[in-house]
Length: 237
Figure 1 (cartoon, one colour):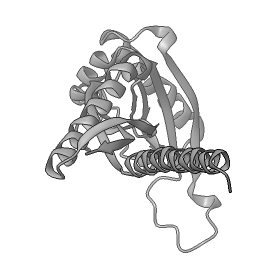
Figure 2: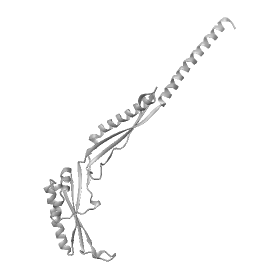
Figure 3: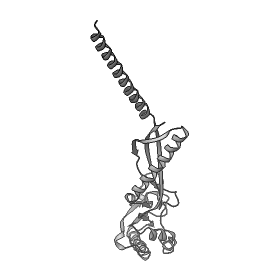
Figure 4: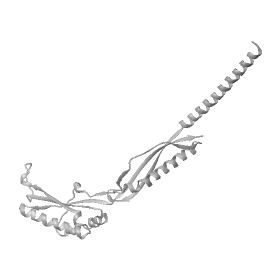
């Protein structure tokens, strides 16, 4: 091989070596980047809030007993009016009050077992309040003895349970989501610090469903609202 050919071979070899070195460097950087991007931490952020119900459905049922059906119906109607006046005197508007036809229980129509009941007929009328005036309902519920004094005896029936609702969830959603996200980031930052890493960008995030539930059985108009956000962060050395 002449000197010119040798020189060309040297140049080509040098180019190959340089190209392979550059490619190797790029591959190494890519692998390092892949490893860094593959290191993640998944955390959950919690936000809670305590709110007061702004809507209430209050069914009131009571019983009227007797052996003369017409007389029992008359008493049921009279007691229904007493309940309505009681509610209106406590701040409930007439259009927030509805009444339903009473349920009739005829002892003689019961074909099972011996009938030892003192009264043949038991009527169970009901009056329902649907209002946003929660305070008025709570005050009236504390003064139910006023109805008893007028001869109306409310029944203890789970099917007539008072229902309190909170309808303004959308007004607190943004602040709660922000609080849950901050809580998640704080947890991720602590993990990164404890593991000798630094926190990178968010890889993915998902928001759980908002939950509304009674604070306890005795104060069901006070609601707890809860949301959990799940966030996945990249970790860097």
